[in-house]
Image (tube, rainbow, N blue to C red; front, side, top):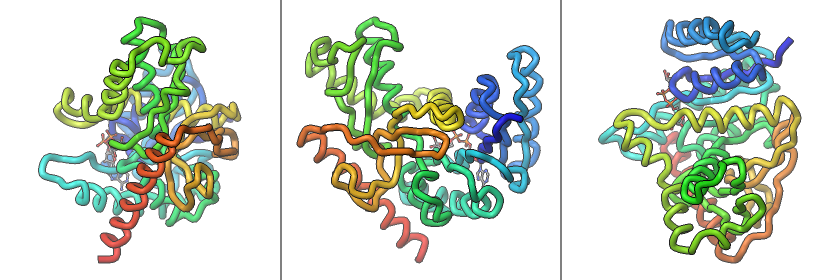
Amino acid sequence: MKPKVSVIGAGQVGATTAQRIVEKGLADVVLADIVEGMPQGKSLDLMEAAPLEKHDAKVIGTNDYSEIVGSEIVVVTAGVSRKPGMSRMDLLKTNAQIVKGVAEKVLQYASQSILIMVTNPLDVMTSLVHQITRFPKQRVMGMAGVLDSARFRYFIAEKLKVSVKDVNAMVLGGHGDDMVPLPNYTTVNSTPISKLLSQDELDALITRTRNGGAEIVSLLKQGSAYYAPASSVTQMVKSILLDEREILPCCTLLEGEYGLKGVFCGVPCRLGRKGVLEVVELKLTDEEKKALSKSAESVRQGVQELSSLLSS
Ligand code: APR
């Protein structure tokens, strides 16, 4: 029997994640949404592709949370994206209410699962599900750093005309304007990036990475990125289910690592069968440490704003 992964929210990111997981044969997937018929329709469509994609994994579309029982991993993509005229606080409140409801269902039906949050604002939502579920911190994480690092790697590969497979990079911090790319840990086939690009060229790629999500939103006109986010979630799912123990940048609860305490923030994590097995502490420059603290501070602020919003 294959492991079971549930994906809550069968929109663009959720359905594409389900597709990637089953087409890699990693798990059977439950695809859940509040919209009636939609997850069922997408699941049937994905199953009809199975003979061609040659996999035997199942996708079950549902509006019923009891289907998530026995999930090893629950991926949460449920939420709305920011619409014109909607403030960041409006988005925060709307998604928090959705995510709160989802977290309560996860607690009811899949209390032993590992939670991967995708809904934005990512770091605050990850903190919220941790508060609600009280799952051990190893079992609550957010997807952002893998995506931000993948974008950075792609931009470097494109600029240098090299294979994306040869580019390694690490982006830490919150998922937002103050993410922290680490040029010192960025290499092309072991050559430090500083030997291949000038500071100005590197700064331009860092800026593009910071604005990676917005660049896609402005091209799409409606909705936001989903192919690369789905690939990023799938990489985390794979490292967990196969106990690969890969080091991937994830949003996790820090308890003293990097000098930060009691805040969810993106740092390198070793992911295996039990979730976040370890936070890997890289040696950072003073400037990088400062940038990471600033990023963590804005997550803390978001969590505070949310708690006053929810209590008002
Ligand atoms: N329970 C289950 N599903 C829900 C709920 C809920 N309470 N509320 C909303 N949804 C569903 C919507 O019906 C929709 O199908 O969540 C889905 C969201 O899908 P999209 O609108 O297509 O959004 P998507 O592009 O997938 O992004 C989802 O991921 O990257 C982040 O910023 C992005 O927060 C957003 C999330």
